Length: 116
View 1 (spheres, one colour):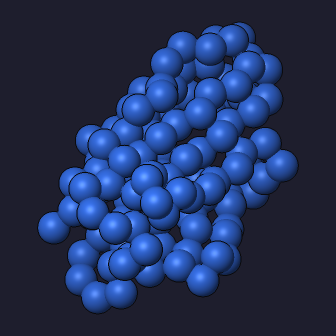
View 2 (cartoon, one colour; view 1 turned 45 degrees about the vertical axis):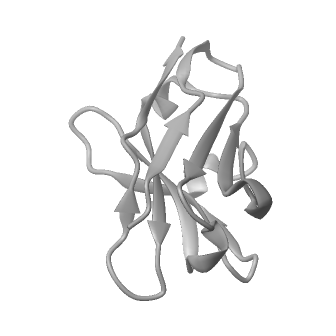
């Protein structure tokens, strides 16, 4: 089992930036993929960005060209750089680890609030 701890959320004005971090309790290079998801009030949790062990990356269309996911295997940490934030980006952001076999692991989430 892996523990994931997110940090970096907060309140920011529209157009601003935040960088989220997800620190894992063990090597992230052992996972098939690491990802960021978000859940806004009254909505389902959705994928934001995911980075695979082979270096492949995918983003939800709504954040392409604004958000960047990256990983530092030496620090067992995954990042989400969020630029040009919009009010509709307001949500709880969750880090997730997808093993090659077995269930996805989740962090506890960090709140991101973008004011207009």
